[in-house]
Length: 367
Image 1: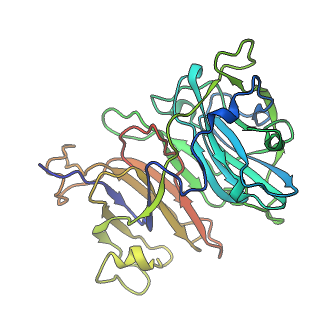
Image 2 (image 1 turned 45 degrees about the horizontal axis):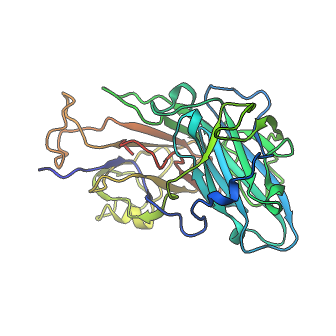
């Protein structure tokens, strides 16, 4: 039996895998902390933002904490997906997929991430619109954060939160032969992305296009009556995902003759030490991860204004007839898969590109 392979093309420095915990900074569900009769926190979105078309939104709020406590419990949800940050550090992502009658929220203890004084809560929310996975249910674009106690209520989402539409990220429908049911491909434009949207502090030279959020009605728990929206909330019974840095795989084929300093004898040195590509040059590499992995690549880049980085994910290569055949063989085969495109900003600051779409209920997919 041929062992399953996972191939990646172009440059990938690190592959982060997903599993069952999240580094200890977030905790498992504390259902008892969320059983008050009615939540006050409001679902929020951006003024004029698409309701069901694709969009990426950044949310943030500053909260003052006089004296940090050991625990600070919050419940977080979004439609379709969110990544939640506290003082620039990722605190969690979700929610797990469900239908509107069982919409999931995640519970996090962000106490260890807070400090005395001003703290920044932020989130990026993706709504994939018509490009969403087949399994994705949806009401409309929205974000919700509920403080699970009196002290935590200062974090509740409401019209006091700020919101910005991210114009540097677009979703693309994968061009694949056959059936495809997962999330879309993405295109990231490094010159347009607001790199500081979820940072602990902003950037005076890049103020963004922030506005006050608009509310969509308060968060309502399942079985509540007369709710103002269709998300019937319930705690996610699944544990948080693990984010573990793992090797990016083995380079099995490459054409990087124009790499500055010459092409290394050992292709895998590029993954460890990095590389510099000359202007108007091209480098292509094929990476074999060796095993089927649920995760995403992380690229760290510097300079290269106008450069394009294209990553393609596939479970196996195919021949000219579209057949996989022996998955260990790569000769006379090419890749057809999900494509991620990155347009490099080209400034001296180091930027990290990484895909944010993985979910606890992810389908088996080319990634």
